[in-house]
Length: 100
Image (tube, rainbow, N blue to C red; front, top):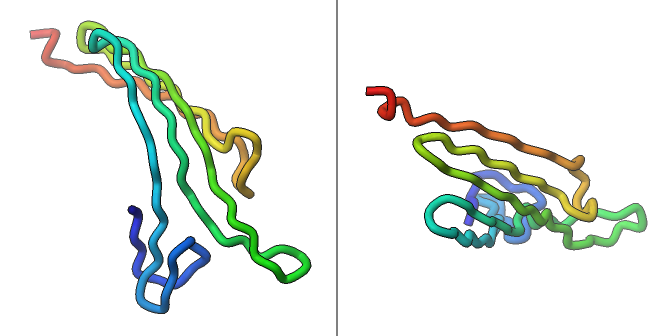
């Protein structure tokens, strides 16, 4: 649950706080290869005809970890489900303790 202390168009919203649930999973294979997926950013979006429509943002990713080097990739907004643009996120993490 992501909680913000403001009123906005999250799925649960009041004048005190807004709550946006998120769900995800990760499967790992031999502590080296990872597959991830999830859904979040649930919003009640106001449509042109003044009705509200529930939108969400699915994502998936893969990761690889070997000898202190970790590479991750995530792709979000699959199927253009929300107003956000497609997003490709890459990250690289190096454990410097392997150089001792």
